[in-house]
Structure formats: C-alpha cells, structure tokens
Length: 259
Ligand SMILES: [Zn+2]
Ligand SMILES: [Zn+2]
Image (spheres, rainbow, N blue to C red):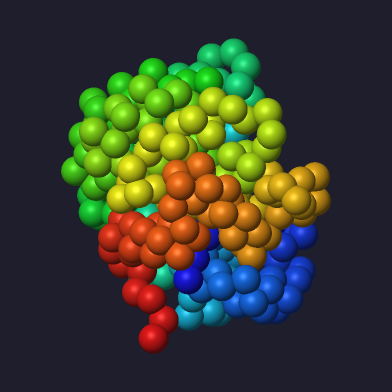
C-alpha cells in the first residue's frame, strides 16, 4: 500500500478523468492520496473531491506563486475552512523566490499567517520552498511550526536543509524528480533521510517520474518514486511502502484509512 502525499486532482487535466485515475491508483497499489489546495477560489473544488471518495483528503492554503489578488486569506478564515473533517493540513504554503520577482515581503507575511493558522487549528503544514530555504527555515522556527510539524514537499534542497527541517519534526517528501537521471544531489539526500521521516508524492499533474517523464503525472505513478527511493536506500519496495504509509497517517492525524 502506497500513499500519494501531494497531488492536485482539481487541476482540469486530472479532474476530468477522476474515475480512471482512481482505478489506476488501485491497480498500482496506491490506496490513498492527499489533494492539495493552491488558491482560496479553488478550495471548494478541492474539498468536494476529497468528500467524494473515502480514500482522498485535502488541505487548505494559498500557494506562494499565487500573486496577491486583492484579498489575503486571514488566519480566522483558514482555520474556519480547515475545520471540515476532510481537511487534514494547512498548505501548500511557503516561499518561492524562483518564480516571483521583486518584493517578496507579501510571501513571508502570507507564510506566517498560514503557520499561525496551523497552530490555531493544530494541523500540520505542507511546505513549498524554492530558492528560499534559509528564510523558510527561519520563519518556521520563528513562528513555532515545530508545534504542529509538517512536510517539506517535493524536496530539492540540500541534506543540511533536510536535517534542519527534521530537527523541527518535519518529514521530507520526494517527488518524481528523484527518478531523473541528472538529479544526483537529490538522490544523495534521499539516501540519507531515515525511513521514519520519509514521504513520497507525485505533485501531479506535474513532474511525472521516469518512465513517464514529460507526460501528465497522476497518483498511480507514485509507485515509480517509491521504487527509486527504495533502490537508493537499499530496502525493498514493501518496506518503503509500509514506512511511508505509516508516516503519512502519523503526520496527517485527521486522516483515517478507509477500512
Ligand atoms: Zn509545491
Ligand atoms: Zn503542489
């Protein structure tokens, strides 16, 4: 049994083929998936997807690449939306200095609001960070994120960053990038992250793993990510699947596996 800990099933290319995606998940041994919110406007659709299936959950949050659109999600609003039983985390949130040019103070303010919301509702955080690792770690520390923990999703940073996040109680999640031939440094990090801190994800519809690279990604493909990480760590796929599934349900405490 594997879990896709991070995908975007509400994006049109996936939403339009949900029944087929779910049956390919089952066929690949992927029992559960977490579909991730990126905008407030899209949240209702994300929640509806999670509500429609016993093996799907969702998050609530605004992605750091989403420019301010006049109105920021307040802490109370996030906490209110997170009270739905299918919402198991706050995110994705974090910092992305790669995609956004100019003043990024609004990203840091939004990130802090998300961490405060997560603490207020005692739910873990799903963190996106790109070219902003030092600020991401600093703000997590300053805002007391260790109280709720979370996951550094689609991890592409150094081993030092992974270790600093793990010291705050965070999990490290690898995506299809770890299967890419040229991803040597990420493969090194995956080798070093202990089994009890690991998660796997697709970030579908993006970043399809080898051998589907360049195509639309989907939760069933998390199996290829898991196989690669298991190989790198020198453990069997079963052992890796058990560990990452156990970690998923330990982190996302409000998710209950379907009987
Ligand atoms: Zn992300
Ligand atoms: Zn994502």
